[in-house]
Image (tube, rainbow, N blue to C red; front, side, top):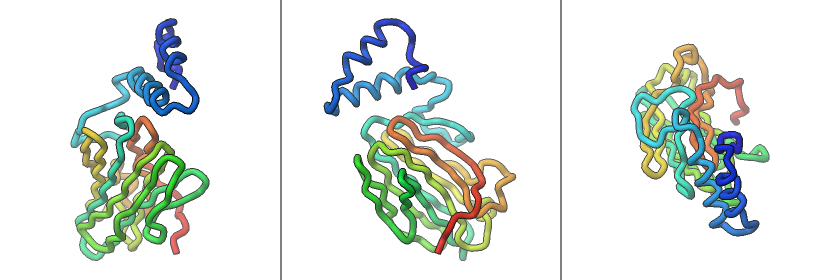
Length: 194
């Protein structure tokens, strides 16, 4: 992240001036400075219906992220899963996990179309969000859509983004951290589901 800062003395002094150990205000000021220095071509702050693979949205400081999964085909069960640091998971078996700075919570396990399954993410930890086709149909064959809401951001995207994933039952769709939300589309190896 620091590589994206301008290399003049004012910016370095600004970062040092606001870094005070143990003070939340200095940490927020530092994050705001870093977010402001990320190249604008790689970050979007607005909703865009044609969300692209690899697109990065700026996460408003301190704002919660809401991830909503819907799908069209009746008789199909899709699930949201969140992976947290230290191999912790939030899914239909474990609907909530507290973190050092917040919590990740799945509202309800919805087992039929149109859903929605809703995941709430608060805090600063990095969270990987997956969609799993619990029933035998692949993710690309059921008309799945993912809606991401965070502050002013409200973006909906089709899953999967690439047609090569149409037979996959697992898809990594988002990486959420303290300053950004990155759109991913990656087939995943089978993951344990009991």
